Length: 557
Picture 1 (cartoon, one colour):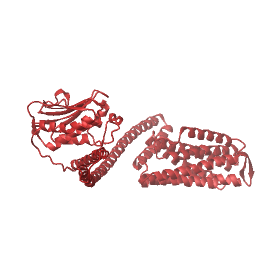
Picture 2 (cartoon, rainbow, N blue to C red):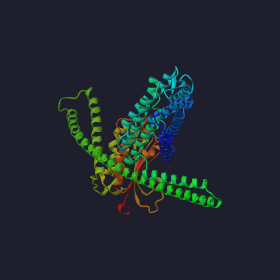
Picture 3 (cartoon, rainbow, N blue to C red):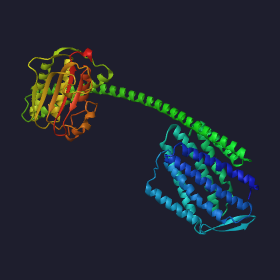
């Protein structure tokens, strides 16, 4: 044996054992629920036990004692050692174990079998004393144990590289640095221990195993210092407090007298309390710093979302303007063909032209909706408020939709007071809002009547609008559209009046001309008048009501 001093051998093993235990417990205590942290912890424990077994074998070599069972123990512990390396490489940096249960169970069973095999004479048959040192005689199945270790190590390399490719930034540097230490350690173990024993029956490098684990600890320490893999200050604080408390405990244990024992134990208890308070305070500080970092990340994400939203609005504007030009040209040509400018229209061609005109009108409306959305989001929408006859405006919209409703087997009924209702509105915006509500009612009704109502009403009467707790009611006008269509459930309500949203009830109708923008535009136009929109239904198949309320005096809102 090359190491002549038992003291030097002890120091050689103590440093890696203490370092490995320290890192193992520190990582585990930082996040006990993380699978990666738990695997790191158990890897550390297995590494320590394996180092102790190798140390015992080294001591036996030093005193020329039989090392057969210590060699078998070292070989047996190498199986779970490599297994935990594999599991850690497969899982990190995830919080949950990513290996499926069947594979995990199979690997665990195989590992136990390999451990049992390593304790048998089929791996290490005997030990002979040759040239002043023990030499292990390999068994007939040593290759099987070594094959398992090499195969699992190769799988560890593969999943390690996969996880490195999947991570980015500092996290990638952390894992890359820490696992480079793992790769170097496994590589040295295979190159200087596993293969020499398998091929040349030579285990003289086995005593240098602790140096390989020390390499792993050094790389992990660099990850801590350079890339803050763990909280460095917290690491140092806990380490110093642990050393201090161990020292004080030893003083208690070796107190020369009862009086000294009492004094020492009081000092020890005081130190434990102070340590607990310090660690608790530091954890709060770390939690606060983490929360601040998360807030900064949220601010950055919010800025990115705002930028994306602006880009989306710009795209809608460009798309709408580019869509309007060809649609307008098609609309003009269709009108000229229907008017006979290119010759008489045959009876067979007439319905085709009507279908084309319907589709073209939908495109026109789509372009108008895109323009409206872009203007609303850019703050470019102008409201031209004036005293308008709202009753006449509603009647005009109903008349425009009467033909379309009749074609679908529906009827439209108008309910309005005999006296005209005037209100301060932008007539075009309110007309568009009502058209969107009526269009929605026709789309999602297969039979029955649609009732359009306009009347004066106090704010929140009949519980039609939100904010029922509002005490200061303001007189205004209500316009509502009731149908006998598909209705909706309460869970669909949050989807209405939102951008590009449709209720789950609408999905059963297979409506292909809905963009999910009509109700949103209606809401924005009504809210621009200091009004509110609402929707209600008694359930699926029981019809629905959509409407809006506008105040007569906007200054009171």
